[in-house]
Length: 82
Image (cartoon, rainbow, N blue to C red; front, side, top):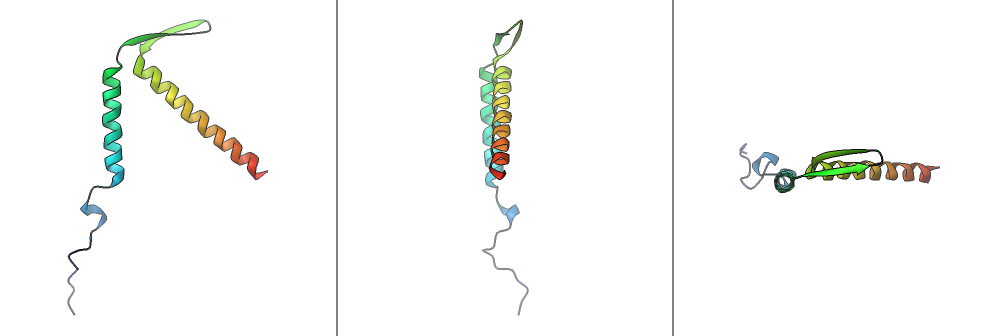
């Protein structure tokens, strides 16, 4: 018997994982979005106003939507348990 490894077995380090590919794609898409949406916009709400780059405004609202979606799912799971 020999201690040789078969040549057709791949280890996880032999190839690029799908997670890395997706991460790179998302970073590239976000970079393009930020580059194309640098103009400043004025946001007014109730008694105050602020001027920010459009990409920050969109990012804040996307983050807010994600947090609200997470909270909604959490509340629904807690109700389902009871």
